[in-house]
Image (tube, rainbow, N blue to C red):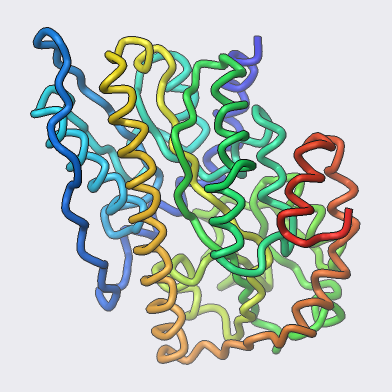
Length: 360
């Protein structure tokens, strides 16, 4: 029942979250330079027999993204260490659908792997709402500690143990979201009053911006540039790379380095396919998923810094909040935590609050 409901939900909401991002990534700036791919470590993984396996790996972003670079590294590791017995075919730019549709394909067994943002999966896995909480992480080091530590591993295990057709293998990075607008400099919550901001179709995101005093408007990413250009909305929020590649600097004059939400990617495999793999190959894809995530994060952070610098060169006025200014936003957004505490689940909520030094 849960799978059928999720599949229906996928068709309704997923397009708002990923399809546009794929379009944006295809316009990626030539000025971004990617870190080289690491060498493959570890020797050949041998299994009995001569079985061949093919992994159809769908992602939302294009070849010019950190996500694609990470998946290409996964392909290199798995194909090399399996001596070609596992072939990985990458389908970028949402060719296999948006995040939700690709996840649904894993459940039905029509695709083998995907790497969605956590936000679209909240309907199916409510505990993932914890990563949409505002100002949860102060920096990437803190995010890595939670995701790579006992809490993150526990969430991966919970998703797998739900037996909902998915095996959760590891974490990667979508990144910190930043604010842009066409109204003026924003450096305090009062500057958000009445601001029409486009948001993802996420209950947490809607609650965040309402609580901060803005007027959030859910909207497809594909419609966003035109909406900003025509003044249908005044503002939007996305990582620096997306702001650059989508050319939002052409229709937005200001940006604020809010880092208000950090969104992870989660690496998923079809449970049906997982059960077919010999144990040594299961271990291989799990190890490769972790190595992929680590490399993907490095690439993401490197091009994020490049993108911010490039945006400033293109004339976008960026306000870097002081610690006390960011704390003012954080304090104003605190009611959102209590709004979603029960949905996330109190034990997990309390663990994350403790790990991130939040009161609970």
